[in-house]
Length: 234
Image 1 (cartoon, helix red, strand yellow):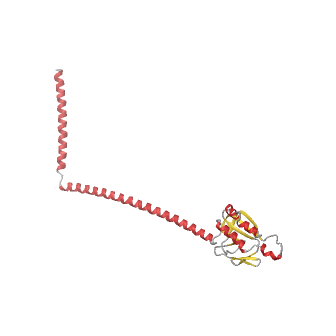
Image 2 (cartoon, rainbow, N blue to C red):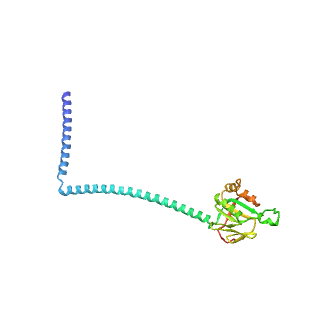
Image 3 (cartoon, rainbow, N blue to C red):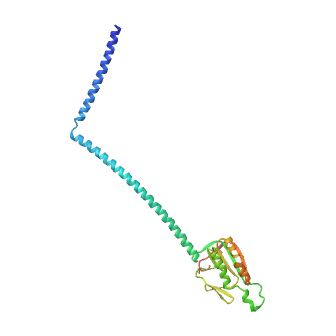
């Protein structure tokens, strides 16, 4: 009896499972059949949607490529702009240096002051001119300072330029038409150590001036201010 009961239960379960499988298969077949029964309009809409989606994806890829190209172009222009600004800054700096060298700009900095004085000892009136400062003595100092890297030079506060001239006029000298009497203070902006060393070389400018009976004094200064050429004094 127990075996028969078990067999009936097992058979019932198998029948239930088989029936469920048949029901699922039938529903799936019905769905497929209903899908196959779509009309031409439904298939056309689905085709249009898919075509539109493909077109959008293609356009999206194209736009992304254009974006990358524009970003690269922008980076190139930014580099060029930065280079142009750098060149502009260099040109401004160069123009300022040129104005400084030709005496058109007020300059300030450290440097040296070279004082040239007539000799304190004159043996006779006949040889007095051999013991005073002449224009060539001033020029020697100016030239040596310029070739040694001086950025700006002035004589007794009067700025000189590449067009300046110095001539003797009796007991005084004229700098661009302006008269100056001894002592002559030649101020130069630049490296004080380099400028003073250049003047003090053995057999150099200072030795030549001393040999010509000119009293020379060189001082290093931390703060020298030179006005532009022909600038009116306050």
